[in-house]
Image (cartoon, rainbow, N blue to C red; front, side):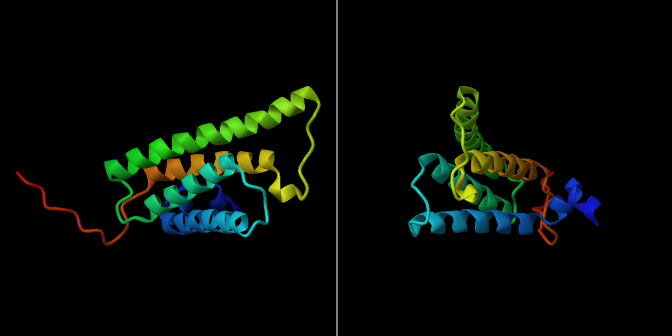
Length: 143
C-alpha cells in the first residue's frame, strides 16, 4: 500500500483529490492569517495563493490546455522564487549562527517555505502530467 504513495500514477489518477487538497491547504492557511492566529507575511501570502490557484487550475476539466499550463507555470515559478527566497533566508541565518525555530514550530517560516517548495513543484508536475478526465468530449477533427 505504501508503494502506491510513491508512484506518480497514483497522483495522476487522483488529480482532482490532489487539487481539492491544495485548495483546502490554501484556504485553511488564509483563514489562519485572517483570524489573526499568525503574523502577516507577504512571502507566505504569495505561496498560499499560488498553491490555491494551481489547485483550481488542476480542478478544471481541461488542465492540459495551453492557457492553464501557461498561467500555472508562470504563477508556479513566481511561487517557487518567493518560497526559495524565504527558505534561503533561513539557511543564511543558519550559516550566521542565528537560527532558531519559531514557536509554535508549525508556524516556522523556514519549515513552511520548504513545504511550499515541495507542494508547488508537485502541483506544477501534475499540471503537465495530468491525463484528460474521463468523460471529457473531444472536439471533432477537421480535415
